[in-house]
Figure 1: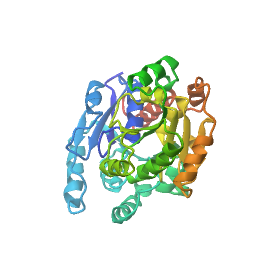
Figure 2: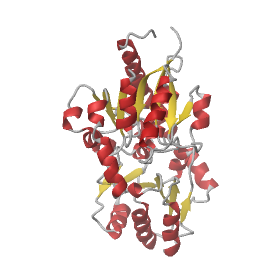
Figure 3: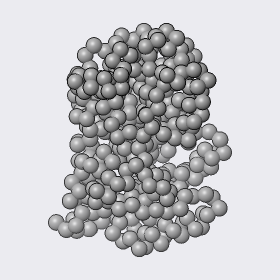
Length: 376
């Protein structure tokens, strides 16, 4: 066998978002002597995963962020990049807003093209409308179509594509052993943060409109009125973080809501939590809801979370049409989980263990190369 084949993954940035985390989980578990990942991003800022990518043998390239006015230059940069990097035969696009540009360029240069849907909405406003328009041609350009769930596939690609043989649901798998409940670790983390007697609520996600942090804070405010021992841990960063901090201050919750920023030990922090709340406005899947269930956490989600994330009896849906008061009442009515062990096994049995998914993706890439007549 010769050198490893190299797959080019396209991202906006390489921070700890759901899509990036999913690909990194796969990257850590493939045979990197056979398949290697390289990444191209739309930012000059160093991302959280960049150091690890280099350690794993990957390269990171950069193109300008698409601004509209630089349409010609953006396309030209892609043409020049791919012309100077003939080692790539497969491009895997996770940036849908400009995929109709870079996947088209790649296809003209003979690459196999993959479009991957990780969401079910572009949000709202003018930017969302522009993105909706730009992503429409993707279904006519890409060779293969991946999605985190049936809903995210249908949203981006439409019924005809998701019923075709070129559409695949790629489960946002996790390293289940990292999240398996450990009673000793739970005590250690709770002692470390001095929360032994507290009811700890948790949330993991970027501070964006989609994650609905302000609603979450309103819900927690109602919970706090009913249980003075309640605390809320928020893990993540994002452009709306200061707005959320302002709301926390207005509600006089500074001593009860803690901002953990971006973390590499989410699995350990989940051990110390009691209840996970995930009231997103939209999600492609919601990988953190899978992680929470693997940890044995009661997982309270909005109705926007796809059915594929509903794996265990820990998974409870509430409607965003209901007021924060009703959410708080329902959350406190759910029975506490007495035995958190064993839930990670349910996640494995549902097909969300990373080793199995990584093996399938690796096989897919190798088969694509074989179809091209490339020597592997």
